[in-house]
Image 1 (cartoon, rainbow, N blue to C red):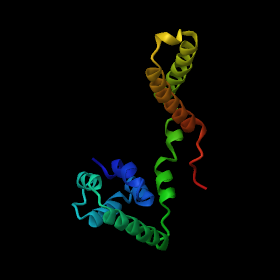
Image 2 (tube, rainbow, N blue to C red):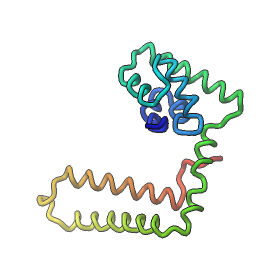
Image 3 (spheres, rainbow, N blue to C red):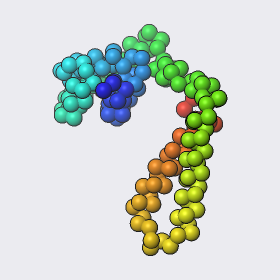
Image 4 (cartoon, rainbow, N blue to C red):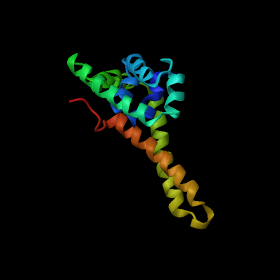
Length: 157
């Protein structure tokens, strides 16, 4: 397991440390969180400790996050810029790759075909839970494809 896997788990409590976990500062952020939790600075140990976190440890993580933010500001480190730098050239690298385009087109076509089939089919033939599950998943995939090819609101200034 890598520190990036802890981004979502930690991001709820300490978003800055969670974001740092997923980037090049993952080891540093992991060391800070491990020190607060009193565990080994490994992703597995941190994940286990976060599952058994106490209110005082929660407050200590929040305090450590504020200190981390201040340190990053003093060092003029922009975590958002580091994160976007890691992925900013994805469109350029995949411009000539037909695999990503084929997957994107097939998902969009599948999404549209599924919507068509749902509107034409008898409502009693399809359980609503399954319809919602498939539409949710396909909708998320299509949204990711559109964000990849046409940009998203999460861009550097």
